[in-house]
Image 1 (spheres, helix red, strand yellow):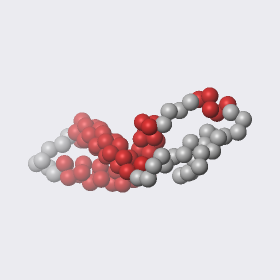
Image 2: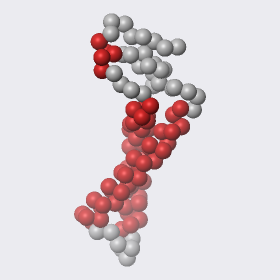
Image 3: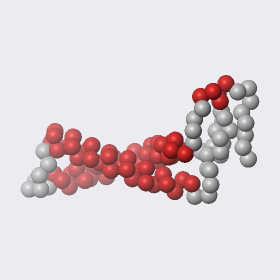
Image 4: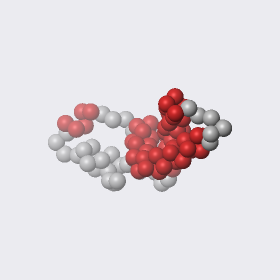
Length: 101
């Protein structure tokens, strides 16, 4: 990941440890993804304790979470950054990016 935005020069790491908060965003996205998977698995395949299908769902959900983890971390950083940095679309019209050091 870049240290600064290539368009506007915004520094991405606003303070030391800034990205630690993305863990909460990633957790929320993972829970939402898991609930979504639980609902569609229950609707299409049925979900009961008697035939151990809950364990099949847990396995499938776990594999899917591992596979989408790189995407989850990237999108978590973007969402977290949107909480703290205002995006001004007119900045892209500047002649030279203003780099903050």
